[in-house]
View 1 (tube, rainbow, N blue to C red):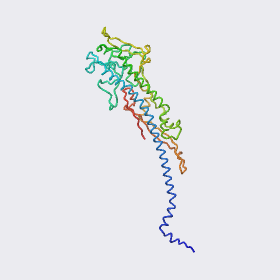
View 2: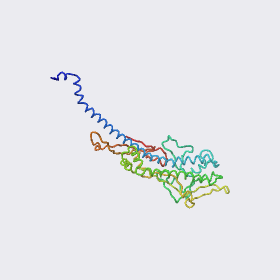
View 3: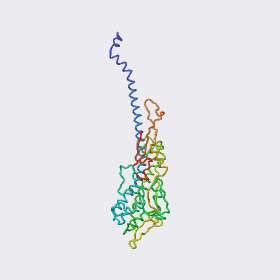
View 4: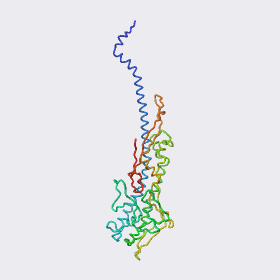
Length: 364
């Protein structure tokens, strides 16, 4: 007859281990499942956090690129183009030393600059320096202005809200230099002015078209979010986060002029001649010539907000889990604070003092 000696087995050390182990195995499996589901949820949150960070950065990078491009067109580009093409590559002009700036014969570059025909560095020998927090590029006038001409400086072109009078003739040549300095000057050199500003106007208009297209309805943000998650419809993906940036769009106002005046000294009678041009009547340059672009008042206010940063929140749908816990009722979401900043306190580096140093920053 079989007899089981329970007391013998209970005193066995192996038996003492097996029984608790049998009880712990389910707990261990539960812990494993818990770790797996927690990791799955964390991975989803990290994926959406990366998506919202990337989307916000891409959206404001388009904003930043447009502002920097406009700042270049306003200041550094015309300054360098005029100086490099009209200072060194054309014959210098002899004249009265009192009207000269640096002991050298006056150049065609100075002929245009001193009439306020384009913005430039006020120090003759200076150039925009990458390390400078602000580039001192603005209009300069030291020439005689007749009643039918408009002085860009007096009309506030060196301020954040310049005005333009389309009934006035704007000078693109210095009457002072023409009177005191200029000899054997061919008035055809004004074509250089038109060529340069035709190029700058084309660059500005093309940049504006591209920016207006990619910034419409937060398209860059939504597409960036879709490409980094892919778990929603492209037309709806990231719409919540994009709505937090609604209204933060760069609006620039271009200034064109259609009447200009320049001067030259006639070799025959040695008298200064005035050349007024009405671009519309003469059918030149499409009837107008680009000068620069400035920020609309509303955009300047938005840039002040963007300097401090804008909070973006985007909710996401949590994945299902083994424990059938509805995590979505706890409102899962990701957050980022994004800022667009330049070196000026008012965050306006487009005009005046155009300094293309806008950059995007992300804060957790």
